[in-house]
Length: 430
Ligand SMILES: Cc1cc2nc3c(=O)[nH]c(=O)nc-3n(C[C@H](O)[C@H](O)[C@H](O)COP(=O)(O)OP(=O)(O)OC[C@H]3O[C@@H](n4cnc5c(N)ncnc54)[C@H](O)[C@@H]3O)c2cc1C
Picture (spheres, rainbow, N blue to C red):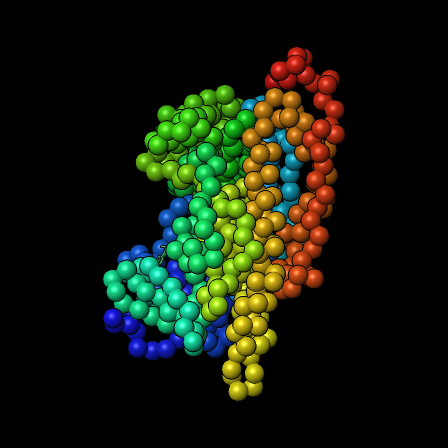
Protein backbone atom coordinates (compact mmCIF):
# COMPACT_ATOMS: atom_id res chain seq x y z
CA UNK A 1 0.00 0.00 0.00
CA UNK A 2 1.21 3.52 -0.75
CA UNK A 3 0.49 6.44 1.56
CA UNK A 4 -1.30 9.58 0.28
CA UNK A 5 1.68 11.61 1.48
CA UNK A 6 4.98 10.94 3.26
CA UNK A 7 4.58 13.84 5.69
CA UNK A 8 3.20 12.71 9.06
CA UNK A 9 0.33 14.81 10.38
CA UNK A 10 -1.15 15.50 13.77
CA UNK A 11 -4.70 15.48 12.46
CA UNK A 12 -6.18 13.73 9.48
CA UNK A 13 -9.60 15.09 8.58
CA UNK A 14 -11.83 12.95 6.37
CA UNK A 15 -14.31 15.06 4.38
CA UNK A 16 -13.83 18.53 2.96
CA UNK A 17 -17.31 19.94 3.55
CA UNK A 18 -17.92 22.95 5.78
CA UNK A 19 -17.39 20.78 8.89
CA UNK A 20 -14.12 19.25 7.74
CA UNK A 21 -12.58 22.43 6.37
CA UNK A 22 -13.58 24.65 9.28
CA UNK A 23 -12.13 22.10 11.72
CA UNK A 24 -8.94 21.73 9.70
CA UNK A 25 -8.53 25.50 9.81
CA UNK A 26 -9.27 25.68 13.55
CA UNK A 27 -6.59 23.08 14.31
CA UNK A 28 -4.01 24.42 11.82
CA UNK A 29 -4.29 27.83 13.40
CA UNK A 30 -3.21 26.19 16.66
CA UNK A 31 0.02 25.23 14.91
CA UNK A 32 -0.92 21.62 14.15
CA UNK A 33 -0.09 19.77 10.94
CA UNK A 34 -3.43 18.95 9.33
CA UNK A 35 -4.38 17.06 6.18
CA UNK A 36 -7.88 16.85 4.65
CA UNK A 37 -8.90 13.87 2.53
CA UNK A 38 -11.87 14.60 0.26
CA UNK A 39 -13.45 11.96 -1.96
CA UNK A 40 -14.51 14.39 -4.71
CA UNK A 41 -12.28 15.54 -7.56
CA UNK A 42 -12.36 19.08 -6.21
CA UNK A 43 -13.39 20.90 -3.07
CA UNK A 44 -16.83 22.46 -3.39
CA UNK A 45 -20.42 22.61 -2.15
CA UNK A 46 -23.62 21.79 -3.98
CA UNK A 47 -26.77 23.61 -2.99
CA UNK A 48 -27.90 27.11 -2.29
CA UNK A 49 -28.13 29.39 0.74
CA UNK A 50 -27.25 28.93 4.39
CA UNK A 51 -28.51 30.86 7.37
CA UNK A 52 -25.79 31.49 9.93
CA UNK A 53 -26.88 32.60 13.37
CA UNK A 54 -24.91 34.48 16.07
CA UNK A 55 -23.53 31.24 17.54
CA UNK A 56 -21.72 30.83 14.21
CA UNK A 57 -20.78 34.43 13.39
CA UNK A 58 -19.24 34.69 16.90
CA UNK A 59 -16.84 31.88 15.92
CA UNK A 60 -16.19 33.40 12.47
CA UNK A 61 -15.21 36.59 14.27
CA UNK A 62 -12.85 34.64 16.54
CA UNK A 63 -11.28 33.12 13.40
CA UNK A 64 -10.83 36.57 11.84
CA UNK A 65 -13.13 35.55 8.97
CA UNK A 66 -16.32 37.46 9.76
CA UNK A 67 -15.56 40.54 7.64
CA UNK A 68 -14.91 38.36 4.59
CA UNK A 69 -18.12 36.42 5.22
CA UNK A 70 -20.06 39.68 5.64
CA UNK A 71 -18.69 40.97 2.34
CA UNK A 72 -20.06 37.88 0.57
CA UNK A 73 -23.41 37.49 2.31
CA UNK A 74 -26.47 39.47 3.29
CA UNK A 75 -27.43 40.89 6.69
CA UNK A 76 -31.25 40.92 6.62
CA UNK A 77 -33.26 43.26 8.86
CA UNK A 78 -35.79 40.72 10.07
CA UNK A 79 -36.93 37.13 9.99
CA UNK A 80 -40.66 36.79 9.49
CA UNK A 81 -42.79 33.69 9.82
CA UNK A 82 -46.14 33.64 8.05
CA UNK A 83 -48.93 31.14 7.57
CA UNK A 84 -48.51 29.56 4.13
CA UNK A 85 -52.27 29.21 3.60
CA UNK A 86 -53.56 32.69 4.40
CA UNK A 87 -50.26 34.59 4.20
CA UNK A 88 -50.75 36.37 7.54
CA UNK A 89 -47.78 37.18 9.76
CA UNK A 90 -47.31 34.90 12.78
CA UNK A 91 -44.14 36.14 14.42
CA UNK A 92 -40.89 37.98 13.66
CA UNK A 93 -37.35 38.47 14.85
CA UNK A 94 -35.80 41.93 14.59
CA UNK A 95 -32.32 40.90 13.45
CA UNK A 96 -30.72 44.26 14.30
CA UNK A 97 -31.93 43.86 17.87
CA UNK A 98 -30.87 40.21 17.82
CA UNK A 99 -27.32 41.34 16.94
CA UNK A 100 -27.45 43.85 19.80
CA UNK A 101 -28.52 41.11 22.25
CA UNK A 102 -26.11 38.37 21.16
CA UNK A 103 -23.24 40.58 19.99
CA UNK A 104 -22.95 39.04 16.52
CA UNK A 105 -25.13 39.15 13.40
CA UNK A 106 -27.63 36.73 11.89
CA UNK A 107 -26.62 36.34 8.25
CA UNK A 108 -27.41 34.49 5.07
CA UNK A 109 -24.76 33.39 2.59
CA UNK A 110 -24.38 31.11 -0.40
CA UNK A 111 -22.98 27.85 0.96
CA UNK A 112 -20.28 27.72 -1.71
CA UNK A 113 -19.15 31.21 -0.57
CA UNK A 114 -18.84 30.09 3.06
CA UNK A 115 -17.09 26.92 1.97
CA UNK A 116 -14.73 29.04 -0.15
CA UNK A 117 -13.88 31.23 2.85
CA UNK A 118 -12.78 28.14 4.82
CA UNK A 119 -10.94 26.67 1.83
CA UNK A 120 -8.87 29.85 1.39
CA UNK A 121 -8.28 30.05 5.15
CA UNK A 122 -7.03 26.43 5.13
CA UNK A 123 -4.65 27.20 2.26
CA UNK A 124 -3.29 30.25 4.09
CA UNK A 125 -2.85 28.16 7.26
CA UNK A 126 -0.89 25.48 5.40
CA UNK A 127 -3.46 22.66 5.54
CA UNK A 128 -2.57 19.82 3.17
CA UNK A 129 -5.67 19.51 0.96
CA UNK A 130 -6.04 16.20 -0.91
CA UNK A 131 -8.83 15.39 -3.38
CA UNK A 132 -9.79 12.07 -5.03
CA UNK A 133 -9.29 10.38 -1.66
CA UNK A 134 -12.27 8.24 -0.72
CA UNK A 135 -11.84 6.68 2.70
CA UNK A 136 -13.30 3.21 3.07
CA UNK A 137 -11.96 2.04 6.44
CA UNK A 138 -10.59 3.20 9.79
CA UNK A 139 -8.51 1.60 12.50
CA UNK A 140 -6.80 2.69 15.69
CA UNK A 141 -3.06 2.03 15.93
CA UNK A 142 -0.76 2.15 18.99
CA UNK A 143 0.37 5.66 18.04
CA UNK A 144 -2.72 7.16 16.41
CA UNK A 145 -5.20 6.09 13.74
CA UNK A 146 -5.03 4.89 10.16
CA UNK A 147 -7.45 5.22 7.27
CA UNK A 148 -7.69 2.98 4.23
CA UNK A 149 -8.67 4.52 0.91
CA UNK A 150 -10.85 2.89 -1.72
CA UNK A 151 -7.88 2.81 -4.13
CA UNK A 152 -5.70 0.91 -1.66
CA UNK A 153 -3.66 3.82 -0.31
CA UNK A 154 -3.45 4.44 3.43
CA UNK A 155 -2.81 7.47 5.61
CA UNK A 156 -2.23 8.07 9.29
CA UNK A 157 -2.59 10.81 11.84
CA UNK A 158 -2.18 11.18 15.58
CA UNK A 159 -5.95 11.58 15.49
CA UNK A 160 -8.49 11.17 12.71
CA UNK A 161 -11.53 13.41 12.51
CA UNK A 162 -14.32 11.87 10.44
CA UNK A 163 -16.36 14.72 8.93
CA UNK A 164 -17.75 12.53 6.17
CA UNK A 165 -21.38 13.60 6.32
CA UNK A 166 -24.79 11.94 6.64
CA UNK A 167 -23.63 8.62 5.21
CA UNK A 168 -20.44 8.50 7.27
CA UNK A 169 -18.35 5.33 7.00
CA UNK A 170 -16.64 6.10 10.32
CA UNK A 171 -19.94 6.24 12.20
CA UNK A 172 -20.19 2.46 11.80
CA UNK A 173 -17.31 2.15 14.29
CA UNK A 174 -19.57 3.58 16.95
CA UNK A 175 -23.16 2.75 16.13
CA UNK A 176 -25.06 0.41 13.86
CA UNK A 177 -27.72 2.80 12.61
CA UNK A 178 -29.13 4.17 9.36
CA UNK A 179 -30.34 7.60 8.22
CA UNK A 180 -34.00 8.15 9.13
CA UNK A 181 -36.25 9.30 6.29
CA UNK A 182 -38.62 12.12 7.19
CA UNK A 183 -40.70 11.64 3.98
CA UNK A 184 -40.05 15.33 3.35
CA UNK A 185 -38.15 16.63 0.35
CA UNK A 186 -36.51 20.01 -0.30
CA UNK A 187 -36.44 21.87 -3.59
CA UNK A 188 -34.00 24.73 -3.84
CA UNK A 189 -33.28 27.66 -6.13
CA UNK A 190 -30.55 30.29 -6.10
CA UNK A 191 -31.20 32.58 -9.04
CA UNK A 192 -30.30 36.09 -10.21
CA UNK A 193 -32.70 38.54 -8.61
CA UNK A 194 -33.81 39.82 -12.04
CA UNK A 195 -35.36 36.41 -12.75
CA UNK A 196 -37.60 36.71 -9.69
CA UNK A 197 -39.79 39.59 -10.93
CA UNK A 198 -39.91 42.82 -8.99
CA UNK A 199 -41.86 41.85 -5.92
CA UNK A 200 -39.40 40.31 -3.48
CA UNK A 201 -38.41 41.96 -0.19
CA UNK A 202 -34.78 40.99 0.43
CA UNK A 203 -34.61 42.79 3.76
CA UNK A 204 -36.31 39.70 5.24
CA UNK A 205 -35.62 36.05 5.80
CA UNK A 206 -39.15 34.90 5.04
CA UNK A 207 -40.58 31.55 6.19
CA UNK A 208 -44.12 30.45 5.27
CA UNK A 209 -45.30 27.44 7.28
CA UNK A 210 -48.24 25.34 6.14
CA UNK A 211 -49.88 21.91 6.26
CA UNK A 212 -47.16 19.39 5.35
CA UNK A 213 -45.09 22.09 3.61
CA UNK A 214 -43.05 25.23 4.11
CA UNK A 215 -41.31 27.81 1.96
CA UNK A 216 -38.20 29.85 2.80
CA UNK A 217 -36.88 32.88 0.91
CA UNK A 218 -33.97 35.29 1.37
CA UNK A 219 -31.38 37.21 -0.60
CA UNK A 220 -27.78 36.18 -1.31
CA UNK A 221 -24.58 37.88 -2.52
CA UNK A 222 -25.42 41.41 -1.47
CA UNK A 223 -28.94 41.04 -2.88
CA UNK A 224 -27.84 40.00 -6.38
CA UNK A 225 -29.43 36.58 -5.93
CA UNK A 226 -32.64 35.16 -4.54
CA UNK A 227 -32.52 31.94 -2.52
CA UNK A 228 -35.64 29.82 -2.11
CA UNK A 229 -36.31 26.49 -0.41
CA UNK A 230 -39.63 24.68 -0.82
CA UNK A 231 -40.11 21.66 1.45
CA UNK A 232 -43.05 19.26 1.51
CA UNK A 233 -44.12 15.82 2.65
CA UNK A 234 -44.12 13.36 -0.23
CA UNK A 235 -47.28 11.22 -0.52
CA UNK A 236 -45.25 8.76 -2.61
CA UNK A 237 -42.71 8.41 0.22
CA UNK A 238 -45.53 7.70 2.67
CA UNK A 239 -46.89 5.07 0.26
CA UNK A 240 -43.48 3.38 0.21
CA UNK A 241 -42.73 4.19 -3.44
CA UNK A 242 -39.09 4.43 -4.47
CA UNK A 243 -39.49 7.34 -6.88
CA UNK A 244 -40.55 10.01 -4.39
CA UNK A 245 -40.28 13.78 -4.16
CA UNK A 246 -40.76 14.35 -7.90
CA UNK A 247 -41.74 17.76 -9.37
CA UNK A 248 -45.42 16.78 -9.82
CA UNK A 249 -45.54 16.31 -6.04
CA UNK A 250 -43.98 19.76 -5.57
CA UNK A 251 -46.77 21.43 -7.53
CA UNK A 252 -49.50 19.49 -5.72
CA UNK A 253 -48.01 20.22 -2.29
CA UNK A 254 -48.14 23.99 -2.76
CA UNK A 255 -51.39 24.23 -4.76
CA UNK A 256 -53.42 25.40 -1.74
CA UNK A 257 -50.92 27.97 -0.45
CA UNK A 258 -51.22 31.76 -0.62
CA UNK A 259 -50.43 33.71 -3.78
CA UNK A 260 -47.00 34.85 -2.53
CA UNK A 261 -45.81 31.26 -2.03
CA UNK A 262 -47.36 29.96 -5.24
CA UNK A 263 -45.57 32.71 -7.18
CA UNK A 264 -42.23 31.34 -5.95
CA UNK A 265 -42.78 27.69 -6.89
CA UNK A 266 -42.18 28.01 -10.68
CA UNK A 267 -38.73 29.46 -9.86
CA UNK A 268 -37.53 26.31 -8.08
CA UNK A 269 -34.86 24.12 -9.68
CA UNK A 270 -36.70 21.05 -10.98
CA UNK A 271 -33.82 18.87 -12.09
CA UNK A 272 -32.68 17.95 -8.58
CA UNK A 273 -34.16 17.71 -5.11
CA UNK A 274 -32.99 16.72 -1.66
CA UNK A 275 -34.78 14.03 0.33
CA UNK A 276 -34.62 14.95 3.99
CA UNK A 277 -32.95 12.47 6.34
CA UNK A 278 -31.59 12.79 9.84
CA UNK A 279 -30.36 10.23 12.35
CA UNK A 280 -31.28 9.51 15.94
CA UNK A 281 -28.88 11.34 18.28
CA UNK A 282 -25.92 9.35 19.60
CA UNK A 283 -23.87 10.32 22.63
CA UNK A 284 -20.64 8.48 21.79
CA UNK A 285 -18.56 10.16 19.10
CA UNK A 286 -15.04 9.01 19.92
CA UNK A 287 -13.43 5.62 19.35
CA UNK A 288 -9.84 5.71 20.55
CA UNK A 289 -8.06 8.21 18.29
CA UNK A 290 -10.98 8.58 15.87
CA UNK A 291 -13.73 11.16 16.40
CA UNK A 292 -16.91 11.99 14.50
CA UNK A 293 -17.74 15.62 13.64
CA UNK A 294 -20.49 17.49 11.79
CA UNK A 295 -23.24 15.60 9.98
CA UNK A 296 -21.31 12.36 10.50
CA UNK A 297 -22.05 12.73 14.21
CA UNK A 298 -25.35 14.61 14.19
CA UNK A 299 -27.17 15.07 10.86
CA UNK A 300 -30.29 17.11 11.65
CA UNK A 301 -33.47 17.90 9.84
CA UNK A 302 -32.78 21.44 8.66
CA UNK A 303 -35.65 23.23 10.45
CA UNK A 304 -33.40 24.89 13.04
CA UNK A 305 -30.91 25.97 10.33
CA UNK A 306 -28.09 24.76 12.62
CA UNK A 307 -26.53 21.79 10.77
CA UNK A 308 -23.51 23.56 9.29
CA UNK A 309 -23.30 25.75 12.39
CA UNK A 310 -23.07 22.72 14.70
CA UNK A 311 -20.26 21.36 12.52
CA UNK A 312 -18.39 24.68 12.78
CA UNK A 313 -18.97 24.76 16.55
CA UNK A 314 -17.63 21.18 16.85
CA UNK A 315 -14.32 22.20 15.28
CA UNK A 316 -14.03 25.35 17.37
CA UNK A 317 -14.70 23.45 20.62
CA UNK A 318 -12.24 20.71 19.73
CA UNK A 319 -9.51 23.21 18.85
CA UNK A 320 -10.04 25.11 22.10
CA UNK A 321 -9.66 21.89 24.11
CA UNK A 322 -6.57 20.91 22.16
CA UNK A 323 -5.01 24.33 22.80
CA UNK A 324 -5.81 24.05 26.51
CA UNK A 325 -4.05 20.67 26.74
CA UNK A 326 -0.76 21.47 25.07
CA UNK A 327 2.30 21.22 27.31
CA UNK A 328 5.30 23.54 27.09
CA UNK A 329 7.20 20.93 25.07
CA UNK A 330 4.39 21.04 22.48
CA UNK A 331 2.93 17.62 23.34
CA UNK A 332 -0.84 17.40 23.52
CA UNK A 333 -3.04 15.38 25.82
CA UNK A 334 -5.17 14.13 22.95
CA UNK A 335 -7.28 11.76 25.01
CA UNK A 336 -8.12 14.61 27.38
CA UNK A 337 -9.05 16.89 24.47
CA UNK A 338 -11.25 14.28 22.80
CA UNK A 339 -12.92 13.46 26.12
CA UNK A 340 -13.64 17.15 26.75
CA UNK A 341 -15.09 17.45 23.22
CA UNK A 342 -17.27 14.40 23.77
CA UNK A 343 -18.38 15.65 27.17
CA UNK A 344 -20.08 18.74 25.75
CA UNK A 345 -20.95 18.49 22.05
CA UNK A 346 -23.20 15.38 21.86
CA UNK A 347 -25.67 16.72 24.42
CA UNK A 348 -25.91 20.12 22.71
CA UNK A 349 -26.43 18.49 19.32
CA UNK A 350 -28.96 16.05 20.74
CA UNK A 351 -31.01 19.05 21.85
CA UNK A 352 -30.80 20.60 18.39
CA UNK A 353 -31.72 17.34 16.62
CA UNK A 354 -34.71 16.71 18.87
CA UNK A 355 -35.87 20.32 18.67
CA UNK A 356 -35.52 20.31 14.87
CA UNK A 357 -37.86 17.32 14.63
CA UNK A 358 -40.38 18.98 16.94
CA UNK A 359 -40.03 22.33 15.13
CA UNK A 360 -40.72 20.61 11.80
CA UNK A 361 -43.87 19.01 13.21
CA UNK A 362 -45.02 22.41 14.49
CA UNK A 363 -44.42 24.08 11.13
CA UNK A 364 -46.37 21.46 9.20
CA UNK A 365 -49.53 21.26 11.31
CA UNK A 366 -53.04 21.29 9.87
CA UNK A 367 -56.56 21.73 11.29
CA UNK A 368 -57.11 22.86 14.90
CA UNK A 369 -53.45 22.33 15.77
CA UNK A 370 -52.45 24.77 13.03
CA UNK A 371 -54.76 27.41 14.53
CA UNK A 372 -53.36 26.74 18.00
CA UNK A 373 -49.81 27.11 16.70
CA UNK A 374 -50.70 30.33 14.94
CA UNK A 375 -52.30 31.78 18.07
CA UNK A 376 -49.23 30.82 20.09
CA UNK A 377 -46.80 32.41 17.64
CA UNK A 378 -48.89 35.58 17.28
CA UNK A 379 -48.83 35.99 21.07
CA UNK A 380 -45.02 35.92 21.17
CA UNK A 381 -43.38 39.29 21.82
CA UNK A 382 -40.96 40.18 18.99
CA UNK A 383 -38.27 40.92 21.57
CA UNK A 384 -38.76 37.78 23.66
CA UNK A 385 -35.65 35.63 23.12
CA UNK A 386 -36.37 33.01 25.77
CA UNK A 387 -36.87 30.34 23.09
CA UNK A 388 -33.53 30.94 21.38
CA UNK A 389 -31.19 31.93 24.23
CA UNK A 390 -30.06 28.31 24.51
CA UNK A 391 -28.80 28.29 20.98
CA UNK A 392 -27.62 31.77 19.93
CA UNK A 393 -25.51 32.47 23.03
CA UNK A 394 -21.78 31.60 23.29
CA UNK A 395 -20.96 28.01 22.35
CA UNK A 396 -20.40 25.97 25.52
CA UNK A 397 -16.95 24.48 26.10
CA UNK A 398 -18.05 22.39 29.08
CA UNK A 399 -21.35 20.76 30.13
CA UNK A 400 -21.62 23.36 32.92
CA UNK A 401 -21.63 26.17 30.34
CA UNK A 402 -24.46 24.63 28.33
CA UNK A 403 -27.48 26.89 28.94
CA UNK A 404 -30.83 25.51 30.06
CA UNK A 405 -33.41 24.65 27.40
CA UNK A 406 -36.58 26.69 26.97
CA UNK A 407 -39.83 25.41 28.43
CA UNK A 408 -42.16 24.33 25.61
CA UNK A 409 -45.73 25.66 25.71
CA UNK A 410 -48.23 22.81 25.12
CA UNK A 411 -50.39 23.47 22.06
CA UNK A 412 -53.44 22.17 23.92
CA UNK A 413 -53.13 25.10 26.32
CA UNK A 414 -54.26 27.42 23.51
CA UNK A 415 -58.02 27.84 23.23
CA UNK A 416 -59.08 28.40 19.62
CA UNK A 417 -62.68 27.19 19.97
CA UNK A 418 -63.91 30.60 18.79
CA UNK A 419 -62.01 30.19 15.51
CA UNK A 420 -63.24 26.70 14.57
CA UNK A 421 -66.60 25.92 13.02
CA UNK A 422 -66.68 22.09 13.11
CA UNK A 423 -65.07 19.04 14.73
CA UNK A 424 -62.69 18.65 11.77
CA UNK A 425 -61.18 21.95 12.76
CA UNK A 426 -62.06 23.97 9.69
CA UNK A 427 -61.26 27.57 10.52
CA UNK A 428 -63.94 30.25 10.52
CA UNK A 429 -61.57 32.61 8.76
CA UNK A 430 -59.29 31.78 5.85
C1 LIG B 1 -32.25 22.04 2.51
C2 LIG B 1 -31.18 22.24 3.56
C3 LIG B 1 -31.03 23.49 4.15
C4 LIG B 1 -30.06 23.68 5.14
N1 LIG B 1 -29.95 24.90 5.70
C5 LIG B 1 -29.03 25.11 6.67
C6 LIG B 1 -28.86 26.40 7.24
O1 LIG B 1 -29.56 27.36 6.88
N2 LIG B 1 -27.92 26.56 8.24
C7 LIG B 1 -27.12 25.52 8.64
O2 LIG B 1 -26.28 25.71 9.52
N3 LIG B 1 -27.26 24.28 8.11
C8 LIG B 1 -28.17 24.04 7.13
N4 LIG B 1 -28.29 22.81 6.57
C9 LIG B 1 -27.45 21.69 7.06
C10 LIG B 1 -26.04 21.73 6.49
O3 LIG B 1 -26.08 21.80 5.08
C11 LIG B 1 -25.26 20.48 6.89
O4 LIG B 1 -25.51 20.16 8.24
C12 LIG B 1 -23.76 20.71 6.71
O5 LIG B 1 -23.47 21.03 5.37
C13 LIG B 1 -22.95 19.49 7.16
O6 LIG B 1 -21.59 19.70 6.87
P1 LIG B 1 -20.54 18.50 7.01
O7 LIG B 1 -19.24 19.08 6.56
O8 LIG B 1 -20.63 17.89 8.33
O9 LIG B 1 -21.05 17.40 5.98
P2 LIG B 1 -21.14 17.45 4.39
O10 LIG B 1 -21.48 18.80 3.90
O11 LIG B 1 -22.02 16.33 3.99
O12 LIG B 1 -19.64 17.16 3.92
C14 LIG B 1 -19.10 15.86 3.95
C15 LIG B 1 -17.89 15.85 3.03
O13 LIG B 1 -17.24 14.60 3.17
C16 LIG B 1 -16.97 14.05 1.90
N5 LIG B 1 -16.98 12.60 2.09
C17 LIG B 1 -18.03 11.80 2.35
N6 LIG B 1 -17.65 10.53 2.45
C18 LIG B 1 -16.31 10.53 2.26
C19 LIG B 1 -15.34 9.48 2.25
N7 LIG B 1 -15.70 8.20 2.46
N8 LIG B 1 -14.06 9.81 2.02
C20 LIG B 1 -13.69 11.10 1.82
N9 LIG B 1 -14.58 12.13 1.80
C21 LIG B 1 -15.86 11.82 2.02
C22 LIG B 1 -18.10 14.57 1.03
O14 LIG B 1 -17.76 14.52 -0.34
C23 LIG B 1 -18.26 15.99 1.56
O15 LIG B 1 -17.39 16.87 0.93
C24 LIG B 1 -29.24 22.59 5.55
C25 LIG B 1 -29.38 21.34 4.95
C26 LIG B 1 -30.33 21.16 3.96
C27 LIG B 1 -30.46 19.81 3.32
